[in-house]
Length: 239
Image (cartoon, rainbow, N blue to C red; front, side):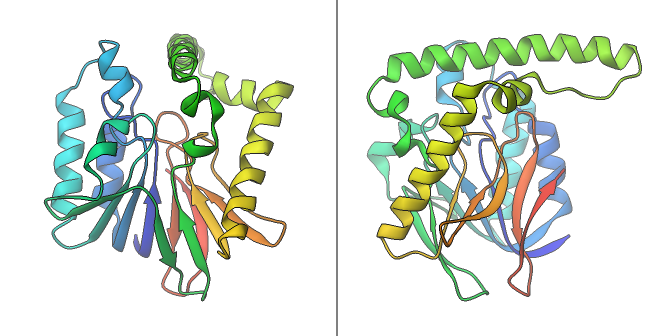
């Protein structure tokens, strides 16, 4: 698979629930001119809670480093990799680490790329509560893991408990809607044509109030990527 641009986010390497092996396989199967890692690449919060940094996670990092010799690689800081904050802007090997970036698509549009946590009040003003929420998310994933082992035993397909919660619980859907609207309003005020983010683990491409909103999803459950082809068209890959 060859693309002009590939954007992935929320890899959460260092978390017990990161799909590091799948990420490495995906990176081996694709080629692009520019690879953008849009936040939460290494999960510092999970590592502080005692999650393990495995050989699979290290292999994934080596894969990204190797990719950077022939591909332009940018790493946009997220909230789980906020340990980078004091060092930005930073060049790590051939990888450029930034807070946000401007991106010009082949379609002539100018995009604001950022992780998206700046619009999350729980991350910015109530970090202790955000970390409790992160533990709760891990619990959901733990339940989901064993429930899907049972489903696999019964010959049933994978079921995402966290996605079901996001799609059905009113407060969750309201949060996602508010997040998307804040992203669009912010990018519009800065005269961008579109905004590309991650953070909420919900892959999406749609137009809101004349602004193109795109979210690259995550590699904890969804395993999604935003891709721009050589004609300037954007689409989502579900790996």
